[in-house]
Length: 228
Image (cartoon, rainbow, N blue to C red; front, side):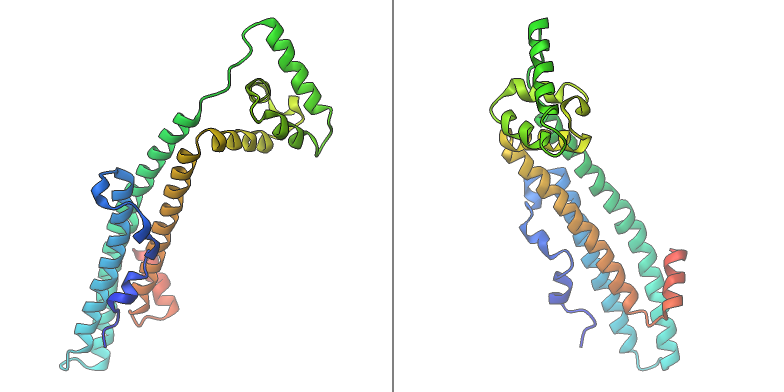
């Protein structure tokens, strides 16, 4: 029986079946597919080599164990360099650049006060929100900023504490505004970041499977990881 069946190999990065395919020509998705495909290829190659060694009747049990360990060390070194190293780095960079572009498209700030009267009004808005008190300012800001660009501008154009908010609360208001204004872009952002998580998990899963067929002890596996 094969060490790894195609069904078991397909479980590595299984959620990638939901991703846009390579034909889209989008760099981030191509790079992410490269990581998952590379993980599967590495596990497949490790299984095939281990199976060939196990089927070699001319090798003693000790000889088979030695050959398996040598094969896994070689495959692991290549995997960590080419897949966990180069391809995963390329995917991370592509995702980072794509997310930055989305953030730039969503970073259309509400109009800022353009004269003294509007600035005074912005100060009054911030003061009213701040005076609601700790624990209530955020809810008040959230309620009154929906559909009110002047309220959102007043909150976002000044340090968070002037509206009685924490930095995290101010950032959350900005995120909620983006969700209301750009739901499709927000969804794309979430999808590609989730896909990167799948690719990173695939790398860990593949490494574990490759090491798992080595027959090495826990200490030997630790040393292989360090050496690679």
